[in-house]
Length: 340
Image (cartoon, rainbow, N blue to C red; front, side):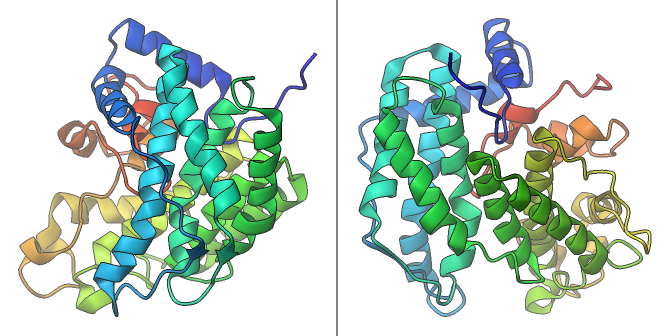
C-alpha cells in the first residue's frame, strides 16, 4: 500500500471539488477553467527550453535580457502546472506526459545555478509552479519513480539553495515561498517550522503601524509602489497557504506590535480602488504600474469571509498571475455570495 503523501498547495479534496465544479459548470471555476485548458492545450507541442546555466541579470540594467532569460522558466513552469491541473480534471494522459517532460527536463538538463544579480529572485518567484505541478503528479504511476526521485533531488540540492528569504524586502517573501514549497514537497518538518518563523518575522518587520509597506511604497518615486506592495504580499500569502495546508496556521497571526497581514491588505485595497489616493506617487495616477496584480486575494477571501475585496474580484475575474501561482481564480476562487 502506498504511503499517504501530504500535499504542497492543493489537497486531494480540493482537486476533487474543482473537478466537480467543472462538471457542474459552477462559477467562478468554470470560466477560469477555460483559460487553464486553453493554455494546457496550446503548450502540448512546445518542448521545454532549459538553459545549461541559470543566470539572470538585473532587470533595471538589462530589462530585455532579464526577461528573455527568466521567461524560459516562467513559461515552462506555468505550462507544466496548467497541464498537471488539466490532467487531474480531464484524466487525459496527454497533459500529464507533457507536464512530466518539462519536469524531467529541468531536473536533469540544468547544470549550473548562479546567484548573482536577479538570479535568485527570479528563480524564487517562478520555480514554485513546477513544484505545484510535480505535487499533483507524483502520486500517479504515469510519472516514473526514477524521474520522481531525480526531481526530488533537484529540489533539495539545486532549487532550495536558490531561495533568497534572508532578504528583508519582497525578495525575502519570494524566497520564503520557494523555501516553503520545497519544504512541503520534501516533507521537511524542521524547514517548514523555520519558514513559519520567517513568515512571522516579515509580518513583524515589513508592515508599518498604518499597514503600508515601507520597503515597497516608494519604489521608483512611488510609481511602482502599489505593484511592489503586491509583489510582497502575494508571496507572503502563497507561503501562508502552503503552511496552512501543511498544518501551520498563520493567516490570523498578529505581531507583538499588533501588525498583521490583514492590516497590510486592508491598507492596500483603497489604493487599488482609487489609485489617485496613493500618497507616495505625486503625478498622474494612470502612470502607476500594475495596480491590479491582486489575484492572491482569491486565497485570502476564503479565509477572511469579511475581507472587503469582492468588488475588485468580481471586476477582474478570472484572475491569474505570472509568478509561481497562476490560475488562482480556478484553484481558490469561491462564490462571492457565500461566506465560506
